[in-house]
Image (tube, rainbow, N blue to C red; front, side):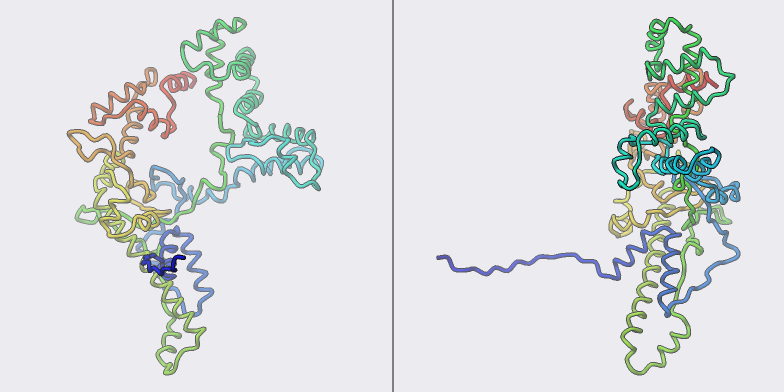
Length: 457
């Protein structure tokens, strides 16, 4: 029988203190979320008071932007501020129900279908799935739901309520005005219904000319151009309640009087709090121990203050680092953006990569180029060459690609292979598939589609 043996093992575990967890949570919040959090602190903790940090010489920069990969200029600020007052896509559709003379049951079903639309305006699930996945007491009937859907599909924008792209395009054709040539409309319906997507190349078009002898070549060409003008996303451009965000830039890069770029933290983006003066004086007069409840609230108040100070210091260092690395960007724009990684930034600032990731989350920088998320300044290096051993940032390459396409002859748009050649002349060597991937990420159509779109205008 073996004797029991005792062994000692040393194991090192890293655990975050409650104070550090609180600081990291505060660091990753957006400015508006932070302001809401601080308001809760002030309402809950009597030891805290807010310092009025607003200065008349500092502009209020609360603006509405898309969450983008490009900046937005400072023009027409008043127009941006009206965006959230507009009803979102779903509200606009719900309002249209009142324009139809519907009984209460049908109107309820239409409202139900609207709530199940995607942000693009599609009904992504089948009517059978809707019936089967709703409570039994609702007693939904598939035929009644189909009738309600037919009514919804008459709403604006045309194509809304479709279950797939083909149905949406056909609905949009049905909503076209009577000025459209009937032959072209009939040909368009035939192409969508029976030859969907088979008109994207010259070879495919030649085949269609032979397969559809009832339509002339000119009619088929006009039908293809008409289809290209239809909207594949019926509700694209409507406010969906999520695409417009109210933001408050956290920092500003500006030119000082000597012409040098400087960075400053915007005070309005950083709520400042302190121990309330009356309580501070009271604490100084206490000779004996403070009541445990008061002591806990006091410790909590100090933790909150330290969390805000850590956030401010971290973003101050991060902003100065971005300014140091991206000086050319602020002078010349996206084409001059240098490669910059979170890992390199963490090593330089002596912080964890997760801390840097939290720090750039939902934070914004305003500068003469526009308003940019901090993540915009971080991108991997690609396409190094003999002239540029450090490579170019992905964002800069995409900006150059966009510039090349903007300058092309619309009658003879650049193919991906030609774009590869143009980039190579700039010292950027990329594979054709990489150029195609970047082009698609910029939502730019292939050359043959760009040519068709231009001809259809």
